[in-house]
Amino acid sequence: MQMADVPYALPDERGHFGPYGGVFVAETLIHALDELREQYARYRADPEFVAEFEYELKHYVGRPSPVYHASRWSERLGGAQLYFKREDLNHTGAHKINNCIGQALLARRMGKRRIIAETGAGQHGVAAATVAARFGMQCVVYMGSEDVSRQAQNVFRMKLLGAELVPVESGSKTLKDALNEAMRDWVTHVEDTFYIIGTVAGPHPYPMMVRDFQTVIGRECLTQMPEMIGRQPDAIIACVGGGSNAIGIFHPYIPYDRVRLIGVEAAGDGIATGRHAASLTAGRPGVLHGNRTYLLQDANGQITETHSVSAGLDYPGVGPEHAWLKDTGRAEYVTVTDDEALAAFHDCCRIEGIIPALESCHALAHAARLAVTLPRDKVLLVNLSGRGDKDMNTVAERAGLHFYCRPACDPSRR
Ligand SMILES: *Cc1c(COP(=O)(O)O)cnc(C)c1O
Image 1: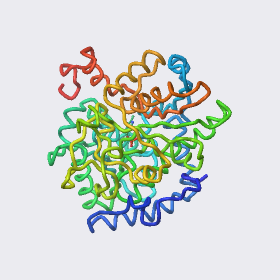
Image 2: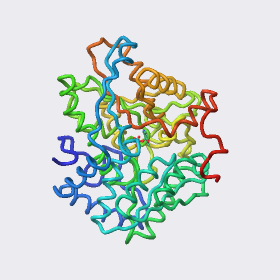
Image 3: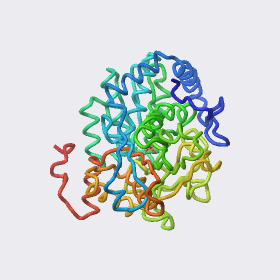
């Protein structure tokens, strides 16, 4: 089976999803991207490469991840049935590892021994450091210095895994600055270096390649749902940061017209406050990080500051394929606030015995909201993109329960 074996064949040769995507980069990066595009096109169709990818997913990541019927929560809501695709049970605790395995295998085939990555909250940095250790590669992770101090746990994990961490002091010292710095490194060391991007953003072929690797999520659901309930779900709901977990579960379902596809963006303190990260809902098209897509920008086209309680959704852009799915109407995009996501977090913990990532709680909150409007025989499949262990400090602070890792026990300060 091809990695994205569905009739929907986008993007075009130059990486366009309708008017979105493409390659908007400095001349110096064109050669590296050309090489990547050619090599990926070759290995994408190579049965040996695909088999190797599937082997790693099974034996290292622990796939297939199960689908779980959240029966107690569904009963309480009294409406549609909630099912969870359990990406939280993957090795390293989220969907990001699927993509990192794929890109690391490609790097190895291309003879690159050095991996670089950018990270915001540190989740992608940890996944990249993990696969670098697994395949015996050198790993350098760029991270805004603001984020380095906010994400001590993940910084420590990356170091344990043998990665070198480079704090980035430019700009706002966050994710977008780390991304620029990683691009600069790539230009300079392109001979031996592979740049692993963590979501369906960046210049072509990244949005397509990351999507292909993540479609394992939706392909598994295509067989798991009929086994469990005798048919496909009525709707699929996933949170959207850059959009990789969402496109991974949506994409194989695009030809299934009767399955609604619903992406959930972070409304932060509320769309009206301006403190949010809802690029598709409140942004407009522009160019950032090598592609054309919906962006949060001011009247002068300056990228605006974003906010979300979940660091993984805190990005001012979104993958170009989502921009296209929005414009064509095949997928719908809604928002959930910090408070709504936190309420869903506590419900999921107490009612189902599952501690979800705050990112995933945005999808859960919308699913619960939608379930109560639907009859009991409807089925909503939620992509539970990750587990919440990483969010203990945030949740404790918001709940006023200061029971977790205070600075005194912060491992990076020892
Ligand atoms: C990083 C992350 C996200 C957001 O990234 P996408 O590319 O939009 O999937 C969502 N959930 C979890 C658990 C994450 O770690």
